[in-house]
Image 1 (tube, rainbow, N blue to C red):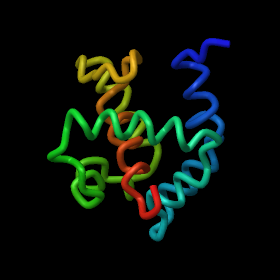
Image 2 (cartoon, rainbow, N blue to C red):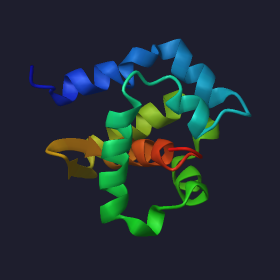
Image 3 (cartoon, one colour):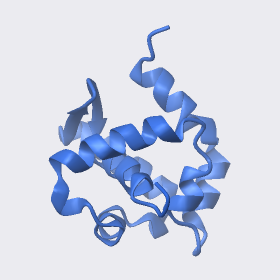
Image 4 (cartoon, rainbow, N blue to C red):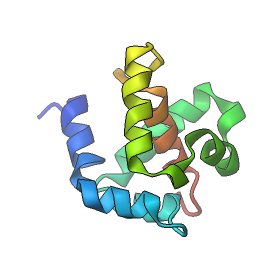
Length: 116
């Protein structure tokens, strides 16, 4: 079976369920490790995250990515930024898939967690 971007995202981000991800990102102590534990295919997320970091080595620091992503603002803000990325053509192609820059940064942030 060919894994399309849609299937990958459903297995990853969408598999989290809306409430699960919102809870993960809106609680003060949640971070990349917490988020990673909710993905079904963390290896796939890390593969995309590494591909992003290869092309953006200046962002290969969890603190830099957290500042860019502002996860403390919660999932609705991240979703809005992802939609805005697509509208404004802030899109990157990684492993053959077009991703918003915010999606790619989320995957990179998970990749840089301790043990990632």
